[in-house]
Length: 166
Picture 1 (cartoon, rainbow, N blue to C red):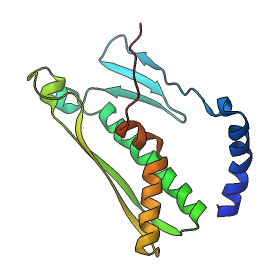
Picture 2: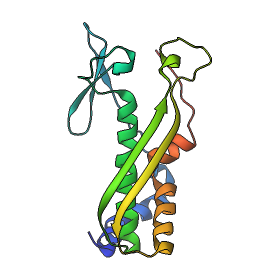
Picture 3: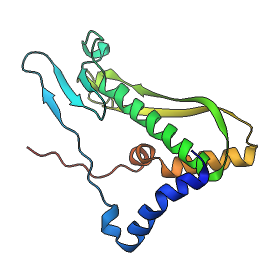
């Protein structure tokens, strides 16, 4: 996709959102089905059904997706799509590359072994290895704007309020 094609695609949406800001607020949702037998939750994604279960470090056998991995995968996907969109808009050619994320978990917290150990990721690192001819200034701008507009990155760095309901 070329920069002008992206702008043409997004222009009517941006106009609508400027004129009617309430139109820009969309509620996304996800739903999972609990398995009656095992310790699993099946989640319908946009393209496939994913069965999430226990990580091997908590007693799982590794045959099911780990929700921690899924979080990192969502970050990588969002950052990759955002980077591509920003590169397109700025006419920065990215021939290819990789986006990777890794995070540190202390399973003592999750398993209740140590009440002082955190439950959840302590640190997450997001990295890009890009095949591009962009100079350092353009690359810095690309990464800065990717960070700014990546929904998952921004959600993790500026967490929303979350309510647990029954």
